[in-house]
Length: 132
Image 1 (cartoon, rainbow, N blue to C red):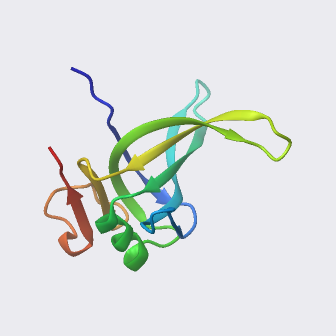
Image 2 (cartoon, rainbow, N blue to C red):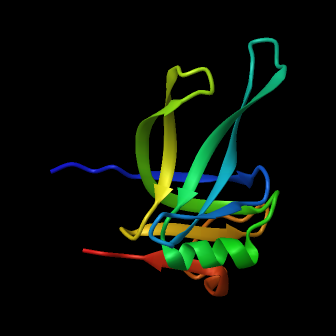
């Protein structure tokens, strides 16, 4: 058995951009920022921000993103890691790792700042899609 799951809690970098596949299905792209904070041996506080590209293919979650997701929104999401190669303008390949929210138990939950995710929070802005 294997499992490809990732859970992130962070802030949306800028409002999502929306596109259509060749088949006419909508999808959304945005970046999510997560932060790590620590104090060094001298007691100075440090913060490191990681940016995670997110691609939303689940149609229910695309609609949630379209209606409710804006720059700065505090969100919890659960999806899968996806690795692929992209061609740059000069023809070089480089690797990209994205978080995919597809129709297989993906979650996008918009939270209020300072709150932790729970199943009962923001039900009107939550879409959990499960496919078994």
